[in-house]
Image 1: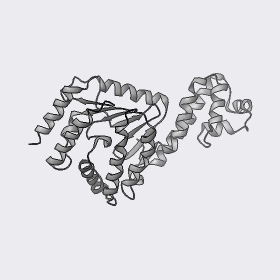
Image 2: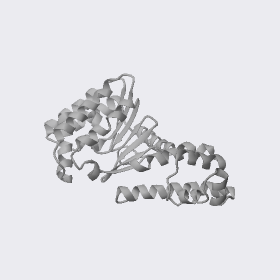
Image 3: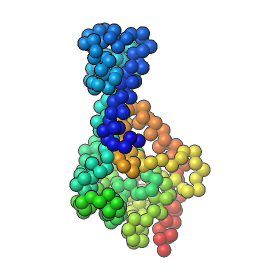
Image 4: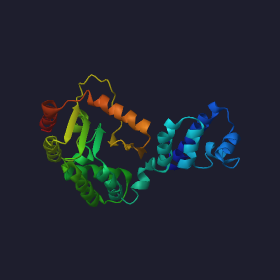
Length: 282
């Protein structure tokens, strides 16, 4: 992963230009000949392919149609649209605290009907109690040395959970067993959080799977990711939030989610794993 948002954006622009050049080359047209056929200035195709000019959706359509690959249009447009928002550094998003980042996702939650969430080490925000969320946010604030607006941030996070009560939505949560046993807050906070998991798992619109530490892995543990409908994936890294909107990449994350789901425990087995984690709190 690049070290800064600007380098990430530039690298993706270069990669998009390279992909458009690779689409053109099999046609035998030079960049100048392609520009002429598209009705552009002589240098426009060269500027696009060398990342000096950002292509519009219509420019991409011209590439796909004139090069005979119309099936690539959706992926390429999604890639182009995603460049400026694909990599958001935490220190930029959280400069004034955590509330802004929590609030930024509210419209996304509101328009999503199917959530698929995988978390390897923490309970997902949609399933957190206020005390658990407060404990995690406190750790983040201390580590990143940012203003403490945790109460406001917790309020937004808990308010976002109203989508869980909408029976017309569907939620698939996959947790590694380690997420149940990683302590944030006191034993009482953890016990309440794990008890809340048991309650939420009983909702008909919620599927909660726990991947046991003893599972025979056919899919390795990954960084946490959220799939929102078939529209985008949000991945949280140590230094940044990455947003993916290309259909082919979304499909890859959906495939990984399915692989993880296949080794998870559900129903009584999942409840046993959660209850065991509660008992281990002492």
